Image (cartoon, rainbow, N blue to C red; front, side, top):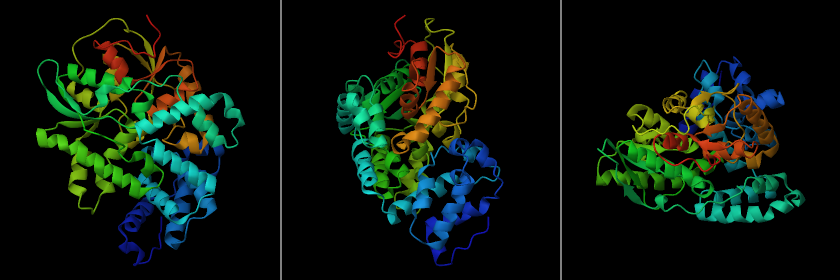
Length: 432
């Protein structure tokens, strides 16, 4: 793609980076075939190619974002399926990131949307506040239909039936390996996940310990920055990322760290991109260190191996595996979760169009509820079509999204792996 940035514009590292990305695009349109929003809406401007044109025009002109551009960029899930499909290697993720930052810096949204986005930033990254919000949502659920804003109704509907008690396993501490120590790892415990489902971290700790790992839980760990970065708030996202880097690397001061383990794939994609986020920053070396250490829990266990202990209780259970976009497209991890489940004795089935997003995408299911609901319905139908007994996924957002559209139990992949290697039966599964 030909671009026309001025020499002055190209002195900005972000513009220079976006210029390089834009120039790799050859207008082939392969991305339209795998874009979820294009499949639903059929609008070229709601495809990656169309959005690239809008971003190019906006950045080249140096003008503030307009309503038309904002509408189509906001509709983008950021699922990155287009990056998997693209034969030219267009790094759409970084281009989208720049566009969202430009929008937030130059466009004044309607007041209701400004308030909603502010509330999301103040609540979701803080487990305590999020728990209170979920409790309020549960109380408000009978009155949801009376809410004037569809996005408020979406917020209320996302509250789980039960809010789990706080897990003390998430407090700063070190869990020693069971048996001979094979590795020392830091577990990134997430933020929203700690309010929505505490079983995931608990299962991860048990599984890693039985696999021979010392598991270090960072002191006072907060949000990694993913939530606000995806909303275009670079300042807030980078501030949270700086704090995360300091807390994750503090464990290295006490002894060698073999990996930073992530069991929320949306966070994992962000951590692995810290090097780009802090390029040219005094913290760049530390950021790149965290990125280099970061491993999805299934990625790590695929190399280390599962614990030897086995139970026959779940053997042969049919599992529909949902591959989170942040895992398969953002981190390029596709086979490891399925391979581990198969090795653990489960019968793994993958749905049709497994590359398509479920519609969760961070805060997308709140900010774009109609599109999110349509994508959820399609994903749930494809998962149920393989006649599973349980659905497994590697991202809490996907689990909540899919779980709200089906009566089938939805669990994290590590919960099944933990169960199969000596841990308790996942609570989401009915008693044996």
